[in-house]
Length: 169
Image 1 (cartoon, rainbow, N blue to C red):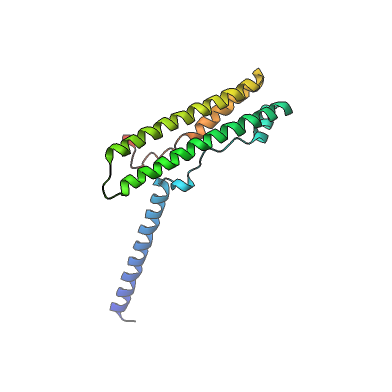
Image 2: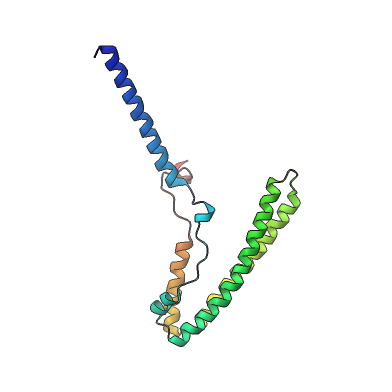
């Protein structure tokens, strides 16, 4: 092989490696900085009665009462969530319409906020009713579980050198 062919082969080999490295770095960066698509975002899931039975040491009567509370709560919560979804679809239609109505979009946002507040109140009262079913010792354990649930609901922490880190600027 003559000198120029070797040089050309080395050039294309290096170019290929550079492209592969850039694409690998871009993939890693994208995976670390993307939010899951809406269909992947976890929605509210009912607590598993067996989990609470095990963690809190609930009696059979308490398990039955909790199951009734849970059924009622998730029936109401589902209705509210469905209404929110319908309003979001209507809001999206406003966005994609040829002549969007900003006042209607603002009104829809207010309705969504009202329903979201209603859902939060419903959830609070549901867990308050669960707490009332518990003995004082079970209530302490439940308070600990509430703390764990709140920590799980926090958004994931970005890396120190992430693009949205205020310390970096």
